[in-house]
Length: 361
Image 1 (cartoon, rainbow, N blue to C red):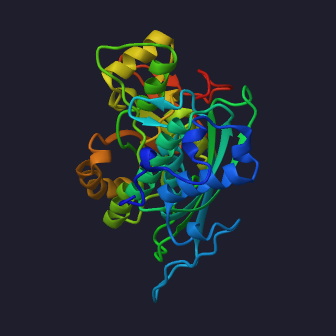
Image 2: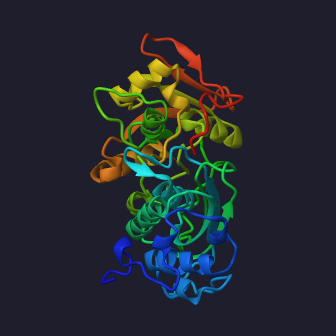
């Protein structure tokens, strides 16, 4: 292959070629020749780097060094159980990469290295797995991270939804004491910023799962946000909270932050950006967009004095062009989030007990 990160199914060859096993069999998880073949001819070419090429159970790496090398690290792990595996605008693979990159970046850290664990259901086609792996390689390259270790397990047919993926990651926090980001740091007077429309990811997945069609195609918002966050921190280090509102959506994320910071929050419901097609889909399915998961959006809670610096930078970035100020932190009703509605009323945005729709991430 001329490009080590480009998979070419037609050129796969080995003593027992992958093409002779077009679907995953239990032997691919058995640690023998089939397992080695999967690693050598699928995972390794896609993710190739000096650490992964060692093919050990552990990757030994050195952090980038400079006279001001910080000593603080960020570490995160997440698992992805998306059904269907492919949906408009993305698939489980890039979702897994972007999800962990974003979790690390929300601390203010620069994501560096990831591990990947595949739990594959017997019968999954090699072609589908290859498409997922290729998208993961592309997502990692876009985010600027390296996949340096991993693992593969195969489960019996009927004991999985085709493929589950776990990703863990390590990031480096900057040597800047002014950057202190965390869920307990929201303060009364802070403004709440949202970097774009909400609910796109879930509705893209649900449109495929439920066979729904709309006048405008709904596309997943999955994206790595670390470059956007780097631009934000370059504009001002004084960001109190960053959060990607994934499972549970904006409402759950803000409720968690309000409880941890012991503050109240007031949202302006009409300022929250929602695509028309997503709003229609949510209404059709009886869902509240505020509780719908997102995979390429962030919430930033910042002092009001910093918003003038931050907004132009966020809106200049492709992933933040629709950034809006959607609310304010208050010293009233601690631990509670409320929203001012379009008709001038107020409603409580309470944490849900369960999920309002089947698990999609």
